[in-house]
Image (cartoon, rainbow, N blue to C red):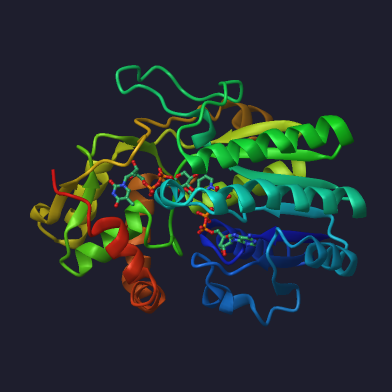
Length: 342
Ligand code: NAD
Ligand code: TDX
């Protein structure tokens, strides 16, 4: 069995590569990644010499290169993690989001049609459902919740999802889609809430909380997401969408306070800054379908997962310090330099 993992040098993709190589010693895992600012080859160094692993530096929008790799490797399964993934960047520059997230998905599916495939899996997000109001804790996203996006990022992911379903209906491409809530864990790029707050707190820098910090996210440990995708590609029904989430809703401000507590840092580091434009209020996944059909349940409780994650960032300073000492500084200045305190 040969599995293509696109975006495997990023946060979730790399964790998925490790999960697959550990779980299926007989599988060949081929990672395709363009190595954008978010892709990090050093993350994959523990598996680079594994004979069952190959890395190929490829842009999923590059049709010729993608077709060539399909011809060489003849994959049985393609799992598409490759994407521009940061909402704030999509607000600054939407175009690359449409290119990679929609057109890149099209190129991959065209290759699947041309060369044949057992399964094409699209890694999507709960953000395609828009947001839920804070005063209706009884509401959750199910697989039939209408698509209703807020940001250029979520719109590009929703566009891709629609295209994936169209390729299933029109060309009978054997597809599945997973829509997961916010992940956290090792190798999370330090522009995202949890690793950014850990890195800033360790440096005694301000912790920039958008708006009042009351927005709610539904956090899932990254390995639980990887196990869900593993189950879907092997046992999920073709043409189906599966929501993935662990009923772990938390306000941003509570996450930031928890990080301060775990690191022994004062809450006075917290700085309330101008809100994100179009900021979604609450995400909450109903995971009943994947539980009932595939027996999936999250294994890591947030209280344990956040401790493990903080320990990982403390034990692997070189990984993220290398990132934040480079081009990231320009990004930080651009995104946070002009963000007024409120
Ligand atoms: P990430 O930004 O950490 O990694 C993305 C990876 O894709 C990087 O390695 C990057 O180099 C690569 N990439 C970007 N453009 C590419 C292109 N044109 N061709 C090839 N490779 C390219 O993102 P992540 O957080 O690991 O997210 C992975 C996927 O999961 C995304 O599709 C995202 O939408 C989805 N998702 C993420 C979360 C989350 O909480 N992080 C939750 C739900 C869904
Ligand atoms: O500096 C910050 N301050 C802050 O208050 C940052 C970076 C974020 N936030 C807030 C915005 C969100 O309400 O924290 C929350 C989480 O923000 P992000 O880490 O940027 O994640 P989010 O926007 O929720 O999107 C994530 O989950 C869904 C991923 O980045 C997406 O790729 C995924 O689809």
